[in-house]
Image (cartoon, rainbow, N blue to C red; front, side, top):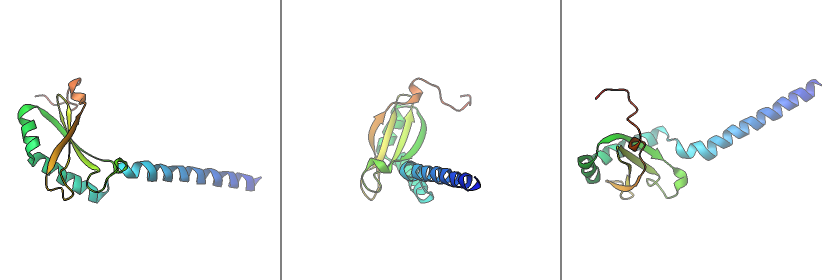
Length: 126
């Protein structure tokens, strides 16, 4: 009886650990950045703010937030799976490296912005 309980607990434990490892390895590792990648992304934000496309955008629209993202499942090689999102009150603009050396950032596309329908999330008064 004791042997069956221990064997059952061992099988359950192995199953849970395999599930958690598989989830981390297959899904989370491709989207969560390491410490080195966080530094690269923060440098990309700086290059984005210094870019001509960003300056033109800042003149036309109210910039609310800048966010970074990483998607290794997207395909391509370094640094093309990194991205910077500039959120405005009208839409979100996507920036990416213009070449492999990432000397400058350029606008790569647009997407929906939550700020079209909602106010900024911070509770500060203007």
